[in-house]
Length: 442
Image (cartoon, rainbow, N blue to C red; front, side, top):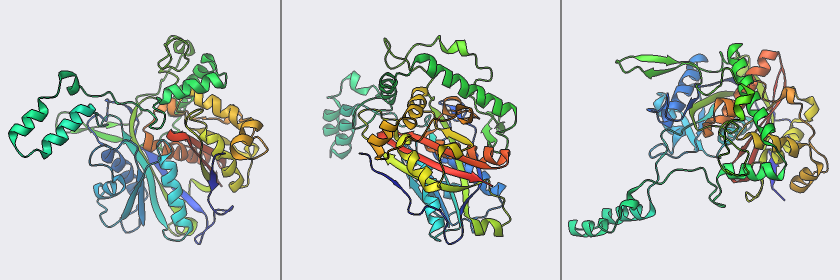
């Protein structure tokens, strides 16, 4: 059975009251090797944090802590929390880094929440970023070993001898791939397995992808992203800058029939997962400022939402890799003291349309919930009219470390826009991990 633990209390009220999401924002998201091709992950994180601080009149002396994360560990950026603080001119602000694959900024948000609940901090910036454009390019094991040995060789002749053993094929870079270390499977291959096991058709997956793009395009057209997505200023090649305001992945005029034309990527004969019904490789950053309820009121902030409950869970990655949210959700709802029927919105990270379909089936399955959580009751059927109403990762993209803050922050803004309510947010992640968080807006 999977181990699933929610945080300690059922009320999530600490010494300073509830934990408030005061503001949330993100950079525009850009397809790999496009707008942010010259920017590294620290640049993207700093864009979000600097704007968040400026928007909310927060100086370095106001911020107790920065908790930031990334998934792709490019050389020199591993301590992204601290590097973002330094890049934003906040050398005296405590900061640290977290990684939990695609649930990274769910974890940074949870860590911030716990610091505030314990009274160790009143104002915390949490978020994440990733740059697939700046991902390290792996080299062959033979080349890596030769370079290592040559570096420690004492004479030039020794170095020449070591390097002479290399063949032309050893010099070729190894194509980077999102694989599970424990299983060796590509995440898309796991999505294919799930689609087959749960009887998810190609048409259902393409319907989900089309809805994601359509909802995201409508959200942009109706101005729902205006307070959430900041402008990024890029080099214009002429010594100045040009503003980047919108994502470049959302299909502004998604046509359902277009999805049928794409061929499967991972199982070319019997597969159903395509480039159109999977989240694309993406660059971007996102951040939120969380405060104790007392500090938010003292500073005159009207929070977007409050964090009401959350949970993380894990299962074996060999099968159904991306079902973690199904395991985490019951504990998060229980901690929040609500049921699925009480929710106004459900926002689930869309790694793949197949994963969304399987997660929905799992939440409605008493047998699956019983098997993996020990609970004897299904979570229930998700009302799809409440699901990812402003689009999801298939449309916006998926900069791994930033996605959690995008999902939570986007939902918090939408609850506020609607005048209040309750929402469930979830994310699947590598290794069979799942995250779930319930937020509320008064």
